Image (cartoon, rainbow, N blue to C red):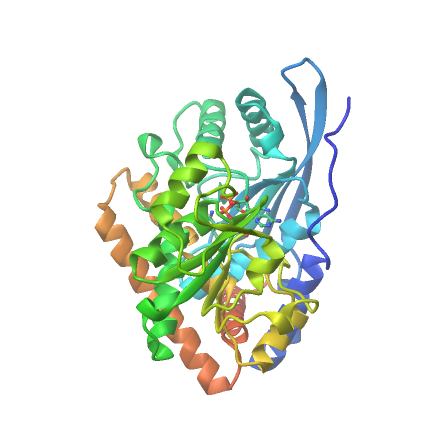
Length: 424
Ligand code: NAD
């Protein structure tokens, strides 16, 4: 047996150490009992599984998979599944903790979880991807379930992967269990609006920030890093709202046009060629250059730790909307904060996905499906309320949007823990 080759990681710092340090800072600022911090900084459960997969050529690869539940004080745990060559246990733990805060901030009755497999899904055939997903699901079948822990898509996974998880789980139970996973295709119990939900949530946050800062969407120059589920829809929606999208990128690099990219042409080119590069009328730029462009709004929508102490002082954007989870390291965060950059933190700016996942879970349990405009309007209400609560808290405490958002969330989880009492 062999394992697939793993390249150098994008993680410069340990994400779980960062998440724990953020929790300690927030707890201090918001007066959370240190005894509770001792509970909240640990993950309730972390499962590491081996996922043996027969490749199309007959060889067998043993991949490493994870499923982590951080906290269930406010409800079953919820969080995506990531297929990426850099996935490691501490990254999954950090992402699980951030999910706990995100669900609490949005006021939805879930705790936090995350999962993943250390693999490059682009190197797998569709059949290999399906076999791997089904075996991984079998390995974690006792951990997940509609009342327990509900996975969703994240980097490198999509609706098809969710359909295989749903089917594998259902085959083992002997009946269809719609509530076991969200982000499913529409024809097997998915929700209208889920595909675009994370980008919609980010758009609503940017629109609120624009209002607060007395700006106009039509005057905004925007750069978006990452052109997957979150980044591609966000760039499209911002352009539809009148903003000028000057640059977008994927893992292979970016494209730039000072006068603005035609998003319909970008999306068509990406669909046709699988890449962004080579679009007529656009210059090539690197991912590093994109982050430093002179723009009003920067939306990192790819991976963690792209803005660090090494480049934070060169970032020119006035507003950063964290479509990705953890794209700014704590040191970079302080540098940007000191310079007056308005950061819309991940737990707020990319929470649209989990909110509509919650709607999908509710619809699945009720076997009753809602209209798309109902879903989008409920999403806007929840996002706008969370944005305004965070804004108000930041003003009252004279702190950043990030600390305000985490503070509100941590307090809610701490309160639920106190109300329930520590078992036994
Ligand atoms: P995706 O797999 O659909 O897209 C990821 C994109 O990032 C791709 O365009 C890929 O080419 C690009 N990318 C990968 N490595 C890169 C690199 N080193 N530099 C630049 N670009 C790179 O994933 P997604 O679902 O859009 O998730 C993106 C981010 O948003 C992640 O941080 C994820 O945790 C977060 N997020 C996603 C959702 C969701 O609903 N999908 C919800 C909340 C948060």
